[in-house]
Image 1 (tube, rainbow, N blue to C red):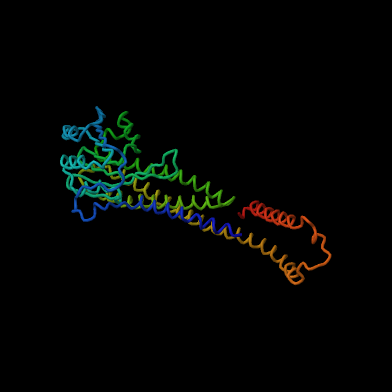
Image 2 (cartoon, rainbow, N blue to C red):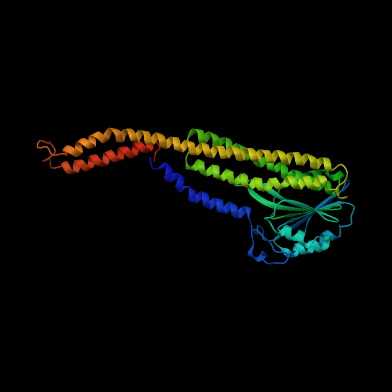
Length: 376
């Protein structure tokens, strides 16, 4: 009877510690940032790689080249070429690289500050000669159950896209393969279409994440109906935290895509807005799915608590029946006691030992019965 409640309460420290870990994951702060002047380049977040890696992809309808470069200086020579350039930087903790990138491509210090702040909210900004976007890329490795989030910052200029990532590994392999093999429209269009394909890859990966989360929710529903326990409660809370992370990443994205649709910058070629409308529809679909999953998980939590309450009621019913049976027997024994002259065990040499053996057997049988009923 008393085991269900302590198990649930005993699970709270783990749940609270994971919630604190999740809050650290969602809200990133840096004491060094406090009091600094606007535009100060200070990395906020976890350092995920030892050193930054820079890659450069150049292409047009006729040619293509891809290489790793040692510094931003190697990218400057191709700045005035007629090809579309994609500069990708993996590892943003090296401030000197971002400073060099900002001076070479005329990026505002506040833009570089936002790139370094890995806890920044997704947003879109339109500047004089470039567009700036902050997004959240979500990854769910095959051998892990926790969703990993990474900030992606994009700078879109005339014939140039610069992407800033926290570490190597992303969801852009499909875009790279289309550029290498000259499939689709990407080699026939400009930097604005390249930016669209990167956005589309990030949003498409949200559907992959949601599909896996949906499978976990279905399995959890079966477990909840069959045999809920403390582990079920942990899984529900884990999924609710993942939904918080997804919601924080996806909700602002609607404003980002909407801003791109309304943008009248000459950097966005005519005909590109229809593609942004498509990913806007996908974003709304992702948001609807996230909200649906949140409602389902809230209902599952209520169902779990109801199930535990019903189980406790069943236990209480059985124990109440047992107590009711023994109340009059205890009353009678309390009045008359064991004061009888003719008791077979009264002068028995092993009576006391037999008494304790019987007590231990009864207690063991009751514990076994409770465990069989899963009350313990």
